[in-house]
Image: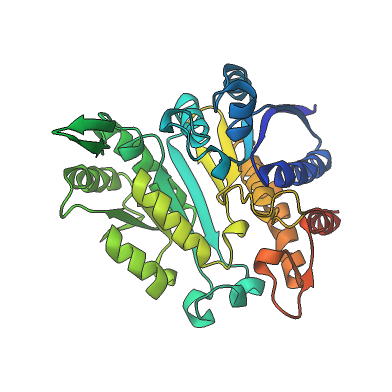
Length: 358
């Protein structure tokens, strides 16, 4: 019997309109290989939705996401919409999808493909063998806390954002981190700022409490500023990094650059019934429409979709291995290119990956 999965497709803005169609080619190839039927429904989010409907997350797009088994997202945003009010900027589509879909956990792997060791700005001896997963709490913290806004006080403006976490929010993300670490190398580093922030003091206390349920996993703690330094100094010490929304946003991008290019890193946002999968890079409007974008992060995000939403680890492994072989053969998009490699555009890189999958 053929399994059918409904997938919401949101290319978004900029290079999202180039990388998502290429990732769908890979998705369809894997689906055919494992006798899986997929039904794709595309809709607008982000800046493209603002241009068409005046809002970043139209009701129809949200309905499609809620009625799907998974969401594949490209990228949103760009200079064109930077002057808009925060409430209707393209990025609000991301926050809205995360909140409405109940996606409280963002998994961002940062693993160095051996062939790309020289693409990193760090020495090979520092980054060799790194394999990190940053698990970021996604629906709480300063991005969602209230009060927030800009107000007039005593004749001047004051900007306010509130960092808020509850016991429940911390417990569920901590459990996920310990579970993921249990299937990896068994180490969780919880990152906070407990020396100065009460929200972090609660975070650390709750994480320690949840750890009692997972005593086979090693738990350590680190202040966020030290973690930022240690990721550059000695990234190999990390297995799973568990942290809040704001710190995770920053640290995961830092970890991504250890691997040579942010264009290589996928992500999975999970926690509800519908997972959302997207590359962690932006919309890159400066190269949009030029067949220069690296599709690998989006293709690897499709692999994460098969793993976390559809329970097909072998499909994830197939895609990951195909990408690895392509890189070993010297093919590169512009962001990871160096002299002596074979330069490929967005479409050609996908063609080569599909040949490896076949």
